[in-house]
Length: 252
Length: 246
Image (tube, rainbow over all chains, first blue to last red; front, top):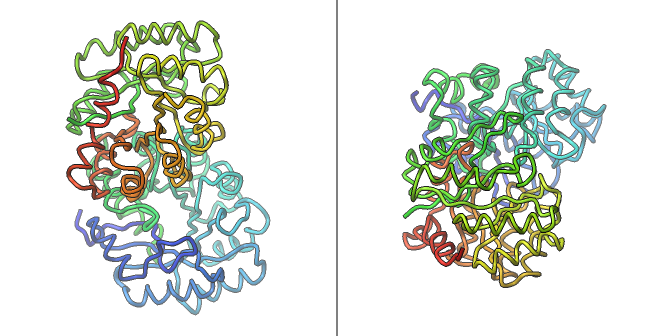
């Protein structure tokens, strides 16, 4: 596939509270080093804690690279009505294209009541939601699936293969989530076992699996190989995973 | 020489994991890797009481390509020790513990006596070292402290969330070696080499389910010097098992 059609479906933009953050220029350089031209970017958790300014940074990045970046709004469900207002500002004023939720960094349970008002906005506006998935107690596979069942009209993308575990303990739950929730898709970044990725393609279709690097947390030059070098996937399947799926689901 | 220091040969229908020695060797060949260290998924004698002999027979089909690590459950008393001795007699090169499946604490006496026995054979003990309780770097470090004469390998070097901690405990315990499989951060490999030396970092993939080719690429992306890369990719592993005695 051409570089122009490939999309990294999850990267972070902006200064990070945890260090290692990148601005839009650096972000573009990193994804292009992996041969990828476009990306879906979400705000990193900023040193100042407040997500509003981080959404402003994302909007500026999208304006600077309109052909290469689509940015999502990040809000903290713990903020209640203020979170809803910030999401609406990000969508209406900043022109961001979706919602990103990080239950581990903002500390909330993804299938709990705090999230529902935001998901209602996503449903009403017809926007997709990316959920940082696999985090203990807040965004485990079954919890994200529970959210997906509450909002079956909303496309929800699970990061990290729907799991963060190097014993494979989260794999079956991630598979059950995909099997039972047609509005769920899954990203490849950092996923334990390439045969898990291939298994998801075999069981659920290549349309349900999206390439992502989670740059700068992970390294695009390595992460893209999980798809490009998969020995048992067809070129057509890789094309879907490397860009067509993100174009269809996330590029707004 | 390139050595993959952590791979699996087993057949687990319950998990849908069928990983024959032929598959492992084909994955080595695809990645240009000379030798793989292999172990079962089961912890002998659980599930498969014949696992030690079974793996030895599987390895024998590929002379020079596979070296065995005996994955043993430490809670079977003298039987566990007998299984380890049997493994070394068959030519195994080390001991493997995975506390997610055994729930045996790394510094429990049942575990320590097997580690000591491995050390008597001048053989290393490879731990699954990840994010789960019983497997984290600080927990495994209790075993490293209790048996300072043993070489302790932190498989996955702390996985997703304990990587920094793995490097820190390796700084505190000179008998700890970090192994890179699965852990998805190339820059942490470079940092580990910088902080504890390239002689104590080893390439592995956790294949064949994980791709040896991709995990080897992770070492290359880490941007080590050519000399350090040679150590990490195989020389360290070779040296570690060259002195193992039956």
